Image 1 (tube, one colour):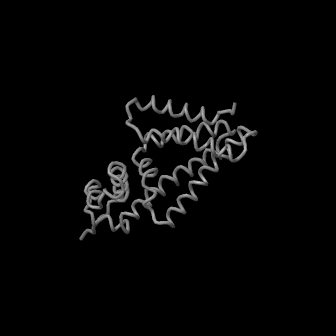
Image 2: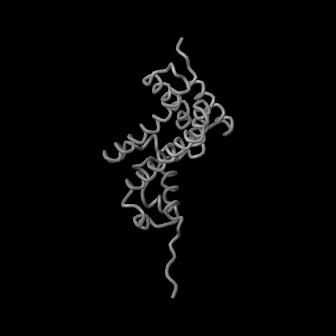
Image 3: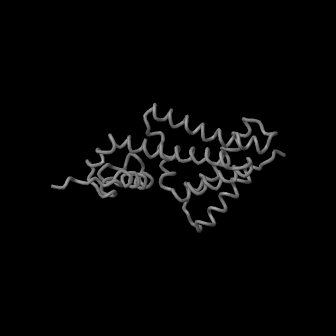
Length: 192
């Protein structure tokens, strides 16, 4: 007698389906049944992996910030100098926003749906991610104070993330180059 073999990719398919549907419809409108159907499983099968739709959202948002933070730390550890590290971080952030668009949209649009404890934990990780950028910017531009560096970093990331809120229109490579150029220009901004 052979035992039932679990699909090792099922959890991943559920997260991909949830990301796509939540980006398209929003957290509230995306049902567990739809997520299951899109993932190729029944709605109730999702509960073998997640306690509920909120747990799916938590997993998605953790995946997003954990990936960004891990990459930022790896860049800092491997880049020989701060200018190069900032360049690599810009490229990675642009790549994430464009190539993992659904997850990025869910990340920026649906965080308010989290329970307060999860929102606090997510914000703590976000502050860690931003702190990496701010430290690099200050290392690259020693005359910039911490508060001003934080403002500049927020503006640079905002320029990249603006892509999530309008129709795609242009070719992917052109969008990547434009967004990277805009973010780099913001990071290099000098007060007049």
